[in-house]
Image (cartoon, rainbow, N blue to C red; front, side, top):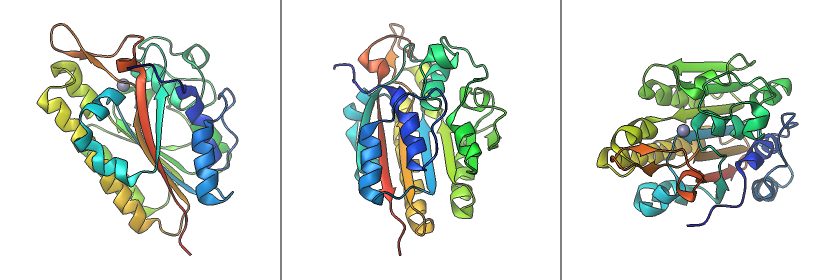
Length: 268
Ligand SMILES: [Zn+2]
């Protein structure tokens, strides 16, 4: 397995591009595979709805080793985007880069540290452009801490089922321009039992099936919008010598990630 070449830094500006929004201040150049895909599907128009389901730690090697668990998700999506996440491949470093478009030394989280990011983020850029943003996460997790205090709406709960249920509710309500739903149930169990324990692998299936449900709801309820939908992880993982799981090293198993995207043009 070789290290993927496309840096995660390129994703943020491409997500801003999808909505026709100026990227955050320190974002690196937009991913051209994603911007070209958007242009091809929307013929120069922009998405007025974006839905992202970010899962934690389901590395590319796991998706490839257990393809049946993601088969329906992958069939529903159109653009497969392998990327190289940051080093160290730790959750707040990775999500910091995903939503600022900047390297860890620029956004300020260079080690495992759940602290507020103070530089410009995609959420700030979307808010400046008048977009309504919802961020859904679990209490005390990186996602609910590092992007706090923005001019967006937060839906933070104490169990994952409430996070996922609220995302479904927000899709039906159709009031937000950008919805980001985060889920770390795979990462939680992976650290305790190892990446390939049956209970850990079961969470991979759960997450891809959940994403299929969101995709189905969006196809049904957001027909009148130009939609970008996607799913993908922050980093990979590997098994430790004592049979547990971690992600900390500069290697393909920890740094190779893959995202999946699909555009649904508005139906006339
Ligand atoms: Zn993580």
